[in-house]
Image (cartoon, rainbow, N blue to C red):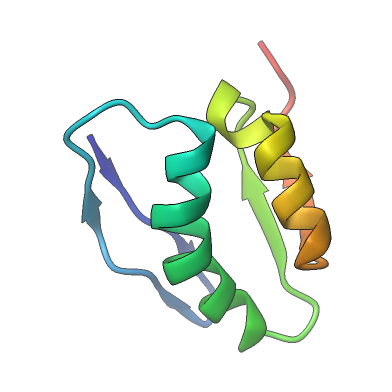
Length: 77
């Protein structure tokens, strides 16, 4: 699987994920090193993600809350 993010102001690195992505790995390997630096550089940024389990787990919600991230989740299907 590959993972990346885009915005009006730029993009992240395209990361190759070779093993299952759980909530802890999502925080440690994607949110902290990739997303937080991008969001800090954009005033009023909103981070949008889908409702896959690693994105909505309590670990991730707590991390996002602590970082004062504004989230816009996609509706669950």
